[in-house]
Amino acid sequence: MSLPVVDLDGTGIKTTTLGFGCATLFRAPDAAERLRLLHVAYEAGIRHFDVAPMYGLGRAESELGRFIRSHRSEVTVANKFGIRPTPAGRCFAYVQRPVRRILRSKPAVGAQVRAHSAAPSRLLYEKGGYDAVNAGRSLRQSLRRLRTDYVDLLLLHDPIPGSVRSAEIYAFLEDARSAGLIRSWGIAGAPEATLAAALSFSHVPVQQVRSHVFASSLSSIPEGSALITFGVISSPLARIIQHVRASAAIRERWYTATGPIAVIPKLRHPFSFARPFNRIALCVVLFGATRPPHIGAASAIAERSCRPSAAEQSDLDSFMSLVQAEFSRAS
Image 1 (cartoon, rainbow, N blue to C red):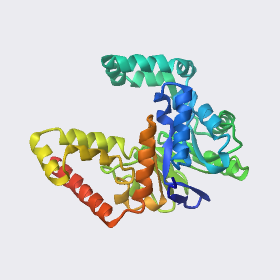
Image 2 (tube, rainbow, N blue to C red):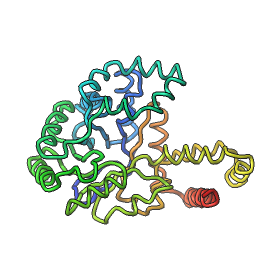
Image 3 (cartoon, rainbow, N blue to C red):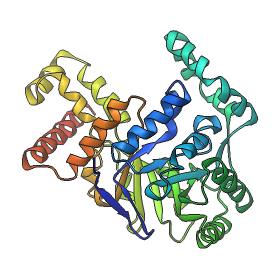
Image 4 (tube, rainbow, N blue to C red):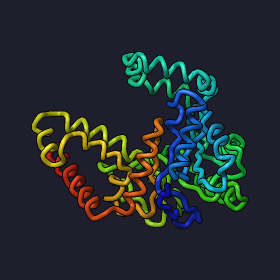
């Protein structure tokens, strides 16, 4: 499968419009299955892989590193710094599998854990280190775990406004780029915090932000920054399904407009929600999956969606109009 390629403007990096996010990789039960997912993504044409020191409580980088050894020149690796697992988190990393199995088997327990997730997160992760010393240490450790001499993108990970030593970090990142340790850099995270941090720099080459049909975050990114977006599918899908299931009258309207509610899986269209922002030509859309068929389906949709037929574009426009009308009515 051949996915469309996007030029991350100003960085010299060309990569696929669909990227595989490793944040959910450790929901797969074992290392063999996780490696299989990475291979399936590659075979589906995906060449952009997004990782961070905190993913898998410190283990995702090493597993991605084992995968990319034989593909390094063909893939783009985006990594981050600023959030890292604590010593307790690194210990917990080795018991993730049985804990996840327990949570899956006992939904009530899982719900309680999610409801009180802030406190455990503080025990497992620590945020900070947006200065040259910590950024350099993080990059060296990441290169070692990834078994590579460079990363294509190095992103400040979800910085807290006011926490970044901008001049110091800018000098470090540009020095790392000149030394060939990174090809470019940027900021990743929630839209408001990312944009606030970006204002402290004269220019940010890449901004990676959460966005979807209910958000306008991409439209507020200044021209000149290449875009990567995530969260495009999961947030709106859950909200729309909840809305449609809320009453018989709403279901009837949707049935009339779109047919049976089974059409809702069409929302798993990673470009549907980015397209209204009219900057998709500059954008990489990240998604995560733990089932190989979902990876293949997303790749097929991404390949088709950049060159929609007139009928497909008409269906997409009609669907977007329906979403906007329904939620305008609901608000």
